[in-house]
Image (cartoon, rainbow, N blue to C red; front, top):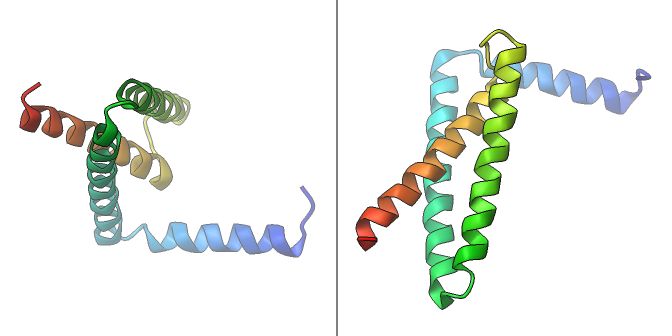
Length: 112
């Protein structure tokens, strides 16, 4: 790529964000926020799809597709990088874990 202003700005911002999240406390905080956001999204999907009970199968298929794509992306990157994940991959995987966990919790709550 050419070294344009936009390209250098994006690379500088990404390197600064990477440096910012190398601190273990910031990294753990970001992972916890991602987990909680996944739980929130799962609860939101269940309540909004279950409101009319017409979109249940469609939403379930979309959630399954999203989680499988995230798993494929995460574990493919981990196998390429010798099991060393970057920050974005860890955040994405933690979001998926939170989403799946919230769906299990909602199933237990509803008794189905």
